[in-house]
Length: 211
Image (cartoon, rainbow, N blue to C red):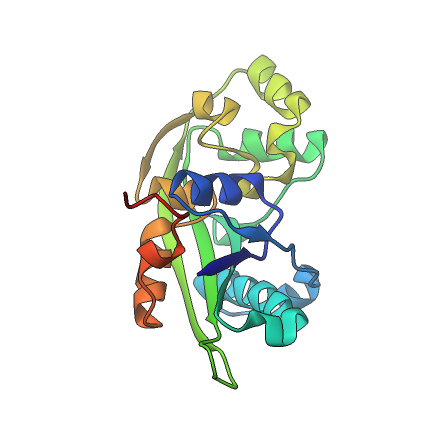
């Protein structure tokens, strides 16, 4: 069974590959800011789910009949700090500002996911949305380390201006929750969504994985 990843995130791709899946990568083209603006006042979990849903649906619709038998997965992550949802910092300056604000504090990384599955012969896809919430305890890096981390470029396109699995791991004291969700894609949440839609996780594994 094909899994199509509606994301260009190397972290999400890496999680799936490590979990035995070789997905097709088809990044979605959606106006995230417009979606967020239309959800003013919504619960944070609803926002990340809506963003993930928009991406998965955009890719599924672009496939047309070719989506038959495929599982399309969309995802989005944002950091909840002081009641505000924070996405990617994009610049070194914003990364430094974010780290000065979140250093030594706890915040919640919200990872939204949406699965769209069009069974053979069906005219409409089956869908499931969910999100994972993981508490992240940030360390208090020195100013030199904050500047060096920002200059590395690694956190610029990461929700919350950090990674768990690479350089950013130096500056995360601990997490409470699902580590795969912090990296970018919650395998437990994905498994639950697949089961909801009648799909076994092992059906997505590359040939030979199960022996």
